Image (cartoon, rainbow, N blue to C red; front, side, top):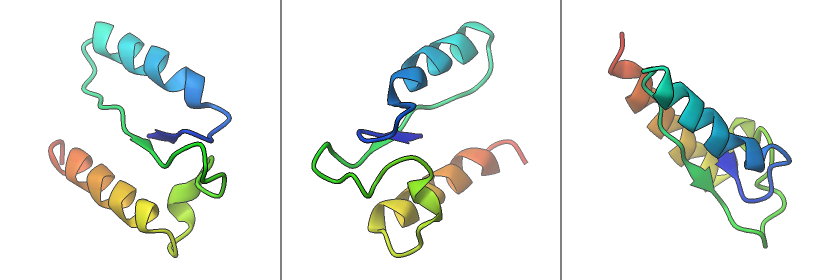
Length: 67
């Protein structure tokens, strides 16, 4: 996961593509928009953000497929 304002945003797609080439299950999710700088890197730990709740729920759904 990343956001439009994450300083690592540009690394997300290449990482996803690399994992896919290796046969490692992965998904890419991009949250927020350029007008919401508060939704940046590690936004998902800010429990006050609705986007954090959505992101964390989606991550749990992803990982439950493997445990």
